Image: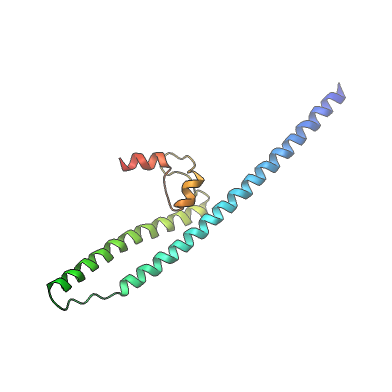
Length: 138
């Protein structure tokens, strides 16, 4: 009777050790993935910051005929739209980096479920899972 208990206890301990190893391995993989996302976020932040600075440096001269002036105005409007989009993405990247530091990165802000890795790999600054994003866009 005691031998059976000892054997069961030993088997249970071995299972626990295996489970802990698997959990540790999964945690390591997750941490590596989050670090990869962080690097992507930092790279994209730098790209957009540089692009925003260079587009701000572009001067449009309103000289010439009406067509030149129209091109200049259109160019300014396009730069402004691009700049607004860039600022929004920069804000989202900043938010994502804050979430990484808090340990809440990859969690949908709407439903609280985990955002798929595939989605985070493509757009590491997303705030919502696909289902919630679709609902928001409707």
